[in-house]
Image (cartoon, rainbow, N blue to C red; front, side):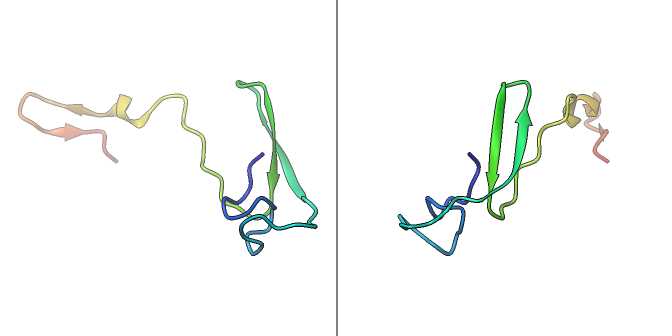
Length: 71
């Protein structure tokens, strides 16, 4: 379950251990590679996934110390 870190609920204004709340699922996200279905609760920013090929694969430093592939 992905939710705010400030509360056990999905409402960040209810900090700590609130009681008598309902959990509202905003959406479900499929993590197919891991085999997970992740319920997303409340308003939160999700960390983006990594690309299949990292940007470092296109970077290089030649013998003179010139760096290419940083754009």
